[in-house]
Length: 114
Length: 116
Image 1 (cartoon, each protein chain N blue to C red):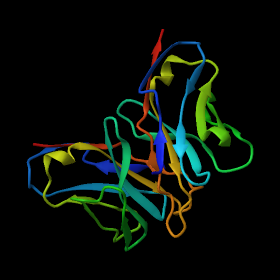
Image 2 (cartoon, rainbow over the protein chains, first blue to last red; image 1 turned 45 degrees about the vertical axis):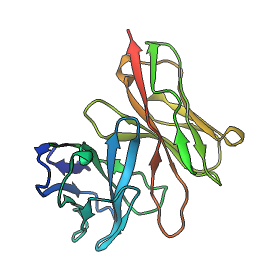
Image 3 (cartoon, rainbow over the protein chains, first blue to last red; image 1 turned 30 degrees about the vertical axis):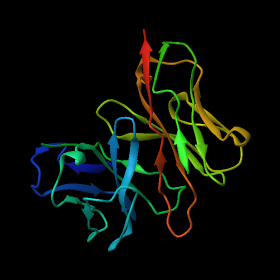
């Protein structure tokens, strides 16, 4: 089944404790991105990647890192999480960077930083 | 500033009634336009999209949307709502950037409640 998977689905952590949220897709997609969803703000893009070893900042990249060493994986790294990073995170992928390619979303990761 | 506006935060309709969810955008040129649906605890699913051509586009689950350039709007409609349509709906635009793409900007969402 074609899908985007994220792990963990739920995470509660404390300020400053490094964490990684994994994202994997099995559709051989070139383009992947991370969004955060906050009430009243919709979804905002954090980082995106057009292909392996090619990443760039989205609208709200502060406090996050990403890497794209393999085509299928696009982990989101929070080196020192803070409470304002409490949010619902979505990973998405599409065949290429072109807008006519549909973005497929993962199920989301709900992160709470205490 | 470029933006996407969904003026209705919550909408309640009766099952079987018609539905219209509003979306307005503010961009220099016509962007690519999308509607997504998010069911509780789920990721986002694409309902439909508009790139060019016929301004009335059909999507999945019986939804349609009409692009009106003069009003900078892309409203989502459904003639008869089913209880399973209860979800949050997001309008999104892609401003057709050169050099980078597939950068969706989302509205703040409209939560749809369906009364039986």
